[in-house]
Amino acid sequence: MVAPNGARPMKKDHPEVPVTVSEIVKTGKACFDTGAEAIHFHVRDKNEKHVLDSGLYKEALNELNKLVPKMHLQITTEAVGRYSPLEMRKLAYEVMPPGISIGIREMIPSRRPTTDDIKLYQKLTESETKIQHICYEPEDVDLLSSLLDKAKLSKIGTWCMFVIGHYSGKMSKPKNIFPFIERLKKNNLNADWAVCAFSKEELSCLETAIKLGGKIRVGFENSFLMPDGSIAPNNETKVKAASALFG
Image 1 (cartoon, one colour):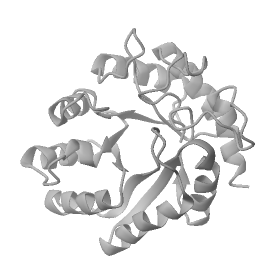
Image 2 (cartoon, rainbow, N blue to C red):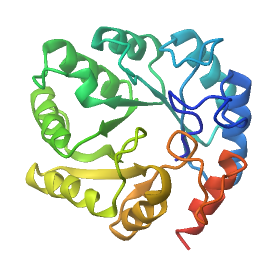
Image 3 (tube, rainbow, N blue to C red):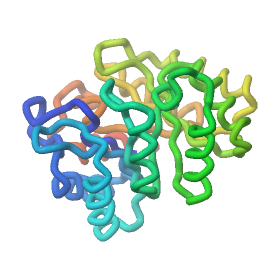
Image 4 (spheres, helix red, strand yellow):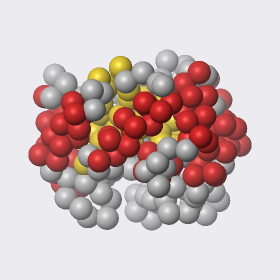
């Protein structure tokens, strides 16, 4: 999976960060052609700010579907400290996309799934929207397990993304993957999991994930760096380098 822009990187950080719908679509095509099977993207407003805008998401999904119909398309409900669970749910209901990422601790900050939470996850599942549950810490897996139990949703093939480290500087270390896997086992979750990591330790984390049977996400949301430490010229170059990790 490629995550070409995220909520925070801007043109001033790297000129090839896609911020308009046309740029996102162009980048998605280039990344698909170099090996990305899925794209996780954020739409931006005119000031390059991350927004939960259903109209922009629908426009981007429509254009991407025309150009890369075989690529899995994933929007996000990321709160970035600005959006409430109510606004996150509203976006999901309005768009009902092929794929959506939901930070479970952002959607359920009380860590106690409500009726509204249960209805949302059930509705998305019924609509065949593929949910990727974003887990920022291992204990988020416990919350996910509780939600699935209460919503009576299957724990087989649950799609998880483990965030190893943090954009603000918290170190991404390969050993941090293991506590997430241990929580999966503890909760009897037969998950289809992946990792994303940051900065200089991104590569070692991705390599460890692959060895453990996981999948990976790369792109400018997480790091501008290539395996040799140089700055990547664009997202597709990072995708090509990541594809090589699978031999």
